[in-house]
Length: 191
Image 1 (cartoon, rainbow, N blue to C red):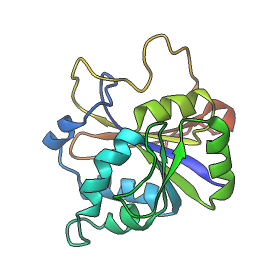
Image 2 (image 1 turned 180 degrees about the vertical axis):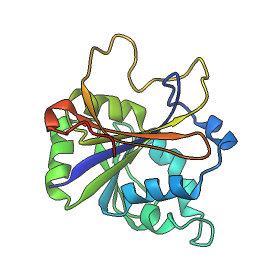
Image 3 (image 1 turned 135 degrees about the vertical axis):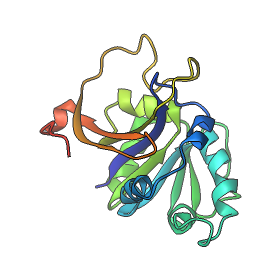
């Protein structure tokens, strides 16, 4: 059975929209290693339509010389949640799952051996969090507030208990916070 691991770039005020603000804080080797650790054991990638459409051209046009993550992003099976796409042409190893259906996500988890990596995909992630489908939430918090944009946890979304499972900071000012659902029995100790 697979585990769903969500990776989000976020601002101090919780914005997860178009992360242009990340450019002022170039990745450090440690941050790259932390993200690489999230993808290494994964057997699948799960994305919302908009994120899939944005990431596909960017990754499929890169080479290993450009970025060591190319193999993972281009060769790993990708599943796209979309009620509007009819095919997943344009980015190798992609399959359209159809519109959001928690049972389809559960079936994907049951059919994947290893991790299922999710990046961005705010609408999808909010739905999966509400349905208890996220096993790990990895927030890379950037030292900037933008005052606008979509939030991972929007107002009116109700309380959601999480347990801190890890915390690390990088020299570029970014902090990586790892969480699990509170009911998962995590110890709450920072790594």
